[in-house]
Amino acid sequence: MLERWADIGLPDAWLVAGAIAQTVWNAKSGLPPEHGIRDMDIVYFDDTDLSAEAEAAEEARIRTLFSDIPVKADVKNEARVHLWYESRFGTAIPPYKSAEDAIATFPTTATAIGVRPGEGGLEVTAPFGLADLCAMAVRPNKAQVSADIYAAKVARWRELWPALDIRPWNG
Image (tube, rainbow, N blue to C red):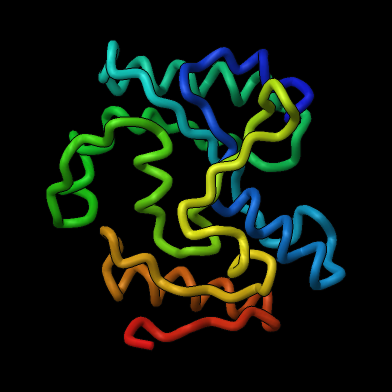
């Protein structure tokens, strides 16, 4: 997939979150690469068009582009998240300044990660580092996720990856 990254053609685009973390967990657990992965999250940052229609069109285009991959692409323009976040999660958030700014708010330290091809190889953004990801440790990132959302995520993950070291919300 990353070998075709240039075809995505979106500003400040990253492959993020579960597509990366769960691939690592599968490799470390001896599971098939696609085990438990619902989608491949691609985020980008385009503050010149905050419309839902533009985001949906990009997602449809990218789903077609990667239709040969056995999981669907979930594409989000992080520049527009503040427009819908409160209606979905009950809390207003300020607009993000970049895709990396958004990645730093992802629900866990292990899934707050993004990768993309760069000039010198693979570019990685991991605001909490890679230690938790590599150790299969899951800790909440309380920047904007609630305890309930964290609990729902880790309940699913515990079933799929029993070797995860899931830390409690207040731990």
